[in-house]
Image 1: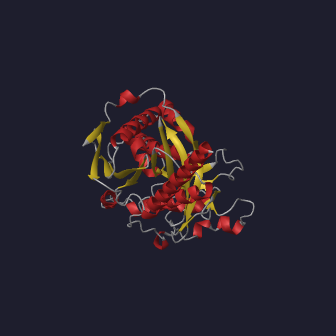
Image 2: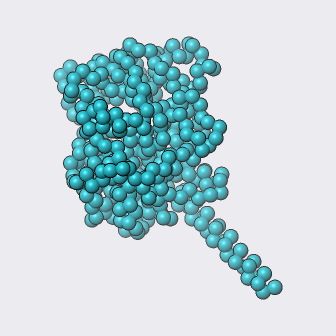
Image 3: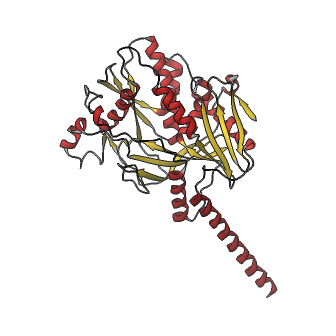
Length: 387
């Protein structure tokens, strides 16, 4: 078993490692039944919700996604297959994973309370990383089983408030073609969290090049015509209204995850809906993602440092590339409050279920085709030399 030391974290302090701005290279959607589509059908647009809205409204009709099935990286890999088929170019990176995995890794220096377990495999010079599903289900159950304080809302209801806030803030089109009836009727809509628009980006931290997939909530305006131009995405979050120092500290810690999630996909703006203790929307606050670390450093308690998170991630990914060097399935594990991240091999050969059969067959077929083209070119060159 190999391990990467988290502490002392101050060895990662200083100016941040090089960062490659996230650029969208592909996308996909899940529809209202959570079926996969290689299109933008679930793309949404932001329009402010009404203050005073009750975030609990409609809780009894919530159409909640059942996420007990293990989807692995299948949707991301299917999107990469489509991208490679359309462009004729192999999508290469050191790390290919979901945004959620990178969020857990980046937050590690300042998050002692939450452990994680991931599965990884190396294939054609890329490391593919997914969440270990059993650990995810166990962690979710442990969170749900936590008793609520007397008189406090349940964990399920508070999770619903976040989805309700999204429903109150989103439109299927830009403001101009959207009817007033739709905008004003959003409070009465049934909340359904099956539909998602997922962006796939190329990015990099330090020496590690990455392809990351993750859900984005909405567009602020519209996608730019130029593919190299940044997209004005909006991330939507909810938080309890800040009433005292304890609330302020809790909010500052929340900002760590908010910042990382948006930083990784290149989301420039986060809109936070502050709510009362009983779920009434009180006010909205817009934050520029790039300014959050400075805000925490200068105005807050300094509970975390953005540059340190970036440098930790750069060092960890460099180490990971040198550690996961053979075939098989590997486990990346950080136990709760552990001072190290552990990496060990679970299966000696193959790729387990981390990679889909379709993806492995597609890549193998493409490589075989490339070899045939090269061999044919060599034969033509030899013929020319002989002539």
